[in-house]
Image (cartoon, rainbow, N blue to C red; front, side, top):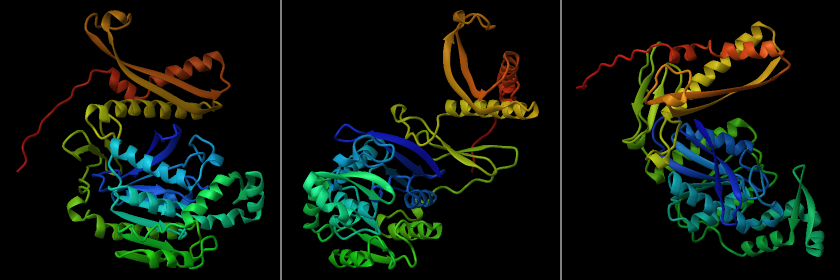
Length: 410
């Protein structure tokens, strides 16, 4: 599974932060959009585990923080259920433009209600999954029932939800009440899978029953025996992911013909690179590890992995950092948080005073090393000198011969 940090701008001009989990190898079989629970954030355990497990099965999952939560901009107090739906629509638009249009929508708790509304407005979405979701958005009002009068009288109040304090405004109550009068699923007419625990203490299983009764076929219900509302046990979230993937394969048509390519056999001392699409996406394999390489969208790629030059810089940076750590440990130097920052560029030979070439262009790798410590000036100078002793640095600065052979396979 490969995780990529994503930022996009919603219709209100706020920058929302998300994470895109993608398969390490093979094509993305389906793009899914995940809506987290009320006040939770994208990094809630259930969302993180489910997204990771689905990515391992070829389903890319984008989860993000709604406005005013987690790493996203904006004031949570100014948001409501309608703004959550709008954020989902904006996220879907971003995915469609930069990656793939989402075909699967997953919502946890109040996020499930928001997913049902968003799915009715997104033509690309072919199936919807809810996890511990209420039948109507207004159900969440019980979380701040004690302050309901204060919110109504004063226009707002600070409430404690799960040990965290949030400023709840009257507009949220009004918005939730407005949505409570609407039937979210009766007109959806898309395959629906409902997960719910019979012992959920936050959203009772009766809410799932109402959802199921209101929904049109095809619809399915899966009981999460003994699971809590947040699916805090790994076994529960793993079960949801496995069941969800099997269910989605029936309705989204991503069966055997879309299965990621098999992993090639790799010898102990070699690396194998395979094609993952007809453009730039490539699978990179060692005996025990695999990653993707790609090019950014502006160059015609799908931006699902680092570029070849990114990988080159990563190799030099990783080797440099490892070498410096070994040296610091060997010399018992009080050094921590070693960071190597690298950049690749091309310069004119005449601008390089210590290069052998005097004409044409020179490939230049810039390396900046930072760390925390209390070293003397002499120790600092020696520390930087040791960086040049990393094996990859030596390889790049020595004479290199690349022998190429091959041919057509039958």
